[in-house]
Length: 604
Image (cartoon, rainbow, N blue to C red):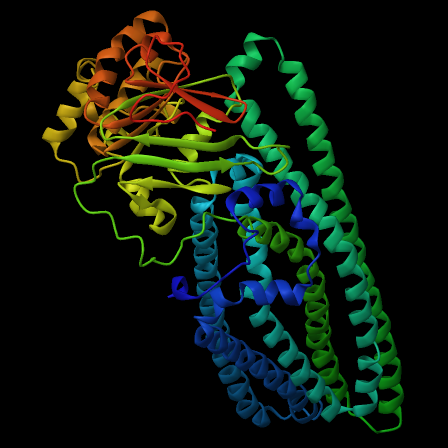
């Protein structure tokens, strides 16, 4: 199957480095169509036999067409001109047989070519999406959701036209051109030379238009991605747009980007509109030259009327094949822009999986949840300085650590490093004494539960959202988690209970209800380490009061990093970790001393 094909990209270093690469707009690397083809060909090569068979069948169809055209000359000279009906049946039967064989070959070849194309689309989309799932969230934010959707849909379909469809079209068009050219030469080499004189004009014209089309298509795809991102952002924030009366401003932004997309599209249309008629003009000149030369050959008895008709028919098939070859050059140049956009995504680095290290034994069950930061430092590219600097922590299992500090001091970065969304610039992080950089990413994350500030829900049922982290959970475990999260009461009042849809992003529920569903999901996962990112942000006092008890139940017995500005939550912590200017200070709740208390140290 296509999924077994290797398709590798040289990653731009770590996830943080990749984010910088995304911001630098690497899509304008301007790779050649051949290089783009080689990049994505592995996803097609696994179905190489199907590609070859489909091309062979389409070539057979072209051969049958050539044979049928030759019979036209025979019928003209041996049947129509002398009026011999008896000579009709043999050529007619042969023509019918060739037509039937050609139809079967064309249908079968087209089906196989379509099968290959659809499998390529599926394989490439799966490949790009799997890669995106490994990219740090910060790097994905630099693209924009709408732009990524555009790349996963329109760009992938465009790449398919270059990598999956183009080889079959190239083979069939090239072989067809050779077959019809050979037949034309056999009929009249003088007329054939006149016809083939137009081939270089078609080829060089296609190369020139291809260069122009590539630039136009790149501008169109980039503008399409920006427009998709703008629409996605504006629609997602529509309540704010309406509340602040900014409809006209948003409409103007969409209109401006829409005009940019329109102008790029019109440039493509102008180029396509000119290329087609120019090819037809060259073809018309060639046909007129052939007719004139053919009339002279008939007058000199060097060619029969049937021979001229056959030659004209061969010419009628040859010119479209030459046009198709020229269009392949134009479309290949056009598709390269989409290839560059996908390559940019695939070169956005992921957190690199490291080979198992002998000095880092695997985590043994049950994981206790001891977390240690040893001189950990981290800097975002272009930040101008470290976000975290030589942070030293030694947290014993089961402690609740409140992480506080001004915005931008690295509170969320601590959680990202622990989840291996990024790798430390220096130092190391230990989980139960194991360096997490030497463990598989999935193994590390299996023992850590994240409760993000935004209660992220999927467009499914309440039950599906609660079991998202543990799809194999029993009904009893789901019910127990919902009760512990104080969600069972309101879920029971929904029209279909746990089978009720929550809507897009949980829009069918209130903010507090979404938060309690997210709490139930976190409780069901039962991981020993918990990261809570502003769990009460955006909630009113009543909603906050409703989730305080569930939060206490959730953190009980787990090593918890509680990122918060809420003093009510900070007061319940065992330790308070205050971040400021890249350094960290641990104190006990309610104490102002900067002296570290067991089991943590003051960071240097």
